[in-house]
Image (tube, rainbow, N blue to C red; front, side, top):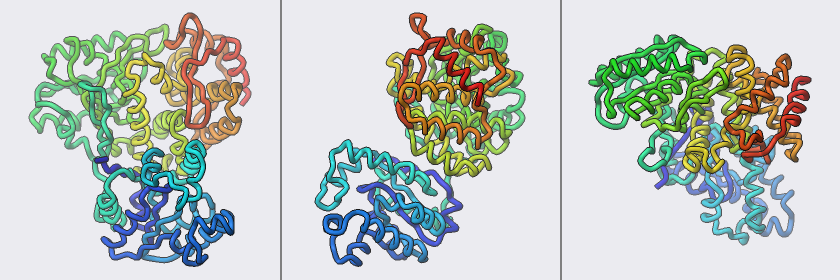
Amino acid sequence: MSELVMHGNQAGGQAARNIALVGFMGAGKSTVGQMLAAQGGLTFLDIDTLIEKEAGLSIPAIFETRGEAYFRRLESRLTQEAAAGEGLVIATGGGAVTDPATLEALKKNCFVVWLHAGLELLLARTGHTPGTRPLLAGKKEQIEELWRRRLPLYAVAHLVVDAAAPAAEIAGRLLRLWRGTERFGPLAVAGVALGARSYQITVGTGLLADIDRYIPGHKGKALVVGDSNTWPLYGEQVFLALARAGWECRQCVFPAGERSKNLEVLAGLYKACAQARLERSSVVIAVGGGVTGDLAGLAAATYLRGVRFVQVPTTLLAQVDAAVGGKVAIDLEEGKNLVGAFYQPAAVVADMAALSSLPSRQLLSGLAEVIKHGLIADAPLFAFLEEELPAVLSYHSAALARCVLDSCRIKSAVVEEDETEAKGRRELLNFGHTVAHAVETVTGYSRYTHGEAVAIGMVTATHLSVNRGLPAGVLERLLNLLKRAGLPVAAPDLPIEAVVAAAGRDKKVKDGQLRLVLLTALGRAQAGVPVSPEELAQALSWQAGL
């Protein structure tokens, strides 16, 4: 049975007069809608049924005798009329969202819920039967293309629901959320499945006060690690919560900043582990951003040849990227993350409340990684960011929760398939990072945040992708989104030859050949693409003129 996972704008639900269900054919809009209306004493409207009643014809007959254009006009009018009502549950047609006026009417007057499911499940439910669904008459490839075109439109819904969950469960929770009698609590994302190293990612609000609940295994000794910025805000809170729960706790606080990712600070963590008398059953808990997770994780991976490790990311960058996947490392003068390991945490606990204290520049740093995930694996997520960027920049918890949840799912799927980058699949997550790391190295990790450097690197990689056939419109959309967000698109004052040289020392260099992750389409990427130093220099030169 599929777990019910929801994320979205709860406030939008409470303010709306109706509930509108959107999604592709076979998502279960009619089934869930009827249950929802019955449970809530609401009126159920099925737009397809209304269309057939007004036209006096079945939908296949409408397509055959009057054409799709007639059907769409009728669908748009009836959907907009329904959206103007009150106390309704509206099951929309699969293509209703393709009309901008209809989509706007739904968003204005309804709590819009996307019943989201994979294409295979949708086809299994519909039986791929064109007799009752004219647009399913094509080949599977054509249906998939139609499905993909609509995903960005569905993605602007207030709420996204896993349509594979039981319909009655979906209906019950939707009703409670719409009425405001239930709020989003901890949302357990499907864990990272790696056999004995599998773990759970928990996303929610107010989790730190009960952090003990989310740490698997028995209570024992714990070393809580944080930096000088994060410790007063959240590290001490976690420390005290664990102590109250019966843990034997020690703390280790180091100077904040990327420059602390070095051998000297790591040695200090080893000493703290020894002073805490950690055992292999003990746990090292990283509370903070990516630097904290890297240092604490590498210490946990190597002290006593491995002790348990828990990630408690408190920045958006760490929640959407660094805390998931098991990469831990420190920097050398010669480059970033050159000494490290693959060491999976026992758990990841992401508290949305911690993001409220982030400076805007740090929020943007994490946003760059979310944009990356949309570019390489999730076109609807990219479209969501384009549509809801103001909400993200305003620290809207629902918008941020969607960023975290979708990013964790994307990264988890890649890590499960290629944990140690042996197959090349995990390299996709390094999109934009080769140039980003080079920029950070050349500037001594002092001028740009990691996310800002990634934004610059993504522009470079997307430009190189356009040179290989990617539609130029993808680059234009990326540049527009980055500029709207306030992220840099170039580092014009850096010496190009120094950036190229630093990129040549990247971990992904093979047999002396630089290889980058490039896009083949929005939402799709390819790893290991050879790029010559001359081509990279030309791209950086073009970029400097932006």
